[in-house]
Image (cartoon, rainbow, N blue to C red; front, side):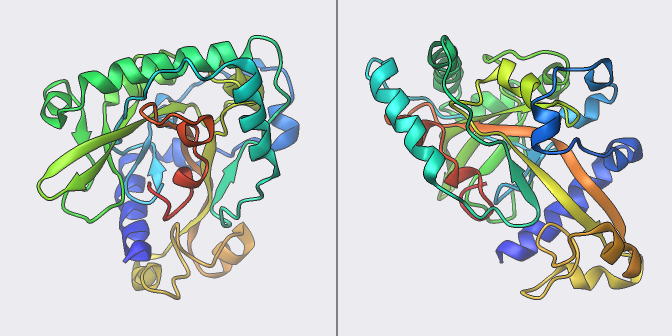
Length: 289
C-alpha cells in the first residue's frame, strides 16, 4: 500500500508543478551546502518552495501537512539538549535512494536558542489548529484526503509562496495530522525552503546543528505506456521505484527529475525530548509522512 501511495503522490504532485521547477537541478549535497549563498541561489521559481503533499514523507511541495504543539521547553537547556542532539549524529539512517538529508553540524553559539524560538512559534501555531476545521477555514487544504496515510498534510499554499521568499516560523507551509476515525489529531508542522537553497541558507532558517532538512530526489517518471510500473513491490518508476539515475531513466524512456519540490523539515512541538521534536525517523519514507 505504501508504494502505491508513493506512486500516486508522485503523479499527482508532478502534475501540479511547472515544468521548469521539475527540471531544475539541485545543488550537490555537502559542497553546495557549505558554500556561501550566491545570487543564483535566490528563488526564481516560487513553486519550488511548496511542500510535499502526502503520505509517507512524500514530496511535500504540493501537499498538506499538520502541525503539532509541544510541552514546556524549559528542559531544553544548552547542556541537556546539546547532548541529546549530538547523540543523534551517530545514527546512520537509510533514507533510500529517493531522499537526501542534511547532516548535523557542530552546535555553535546561539543555535539552540534560535531552534527553541522556532519550536515555540510552531507550538503557538499548532495550538491554534488543534481543531482541524479551523485549519481548513484558514486556507489549509488536505492532500489526498481519501488515501490512507500515516500523516495527512494540510498545506497552505499562500504560506508556501511566502516560504520561498522568507522564513516565518509562525507560518508553517503544512500542518501534520494523524487520523483517528473521522477526526484528525494535530501532531506537527512542516517548514519548507526553495529547492535551490544551499545548506547555509537552510541553516539560517533552522540551525543544521539541531534540525535535519530533507529533499526528494532521483525521481524517474514513467512514459505513458509504462505507468503500471510505478506500482507494486517491484516498481521501477516514481518515488518508490528502483530507477535512481538519469541514464537508467533515459534508457527506460522516462523523465528524470534530480530533485522535486523544495527542502522540508518537520517539527513535532508537542513532544518533550529534542530528538522527538526534531525526529529524523518521522521524516523518513514510511515513518510518518
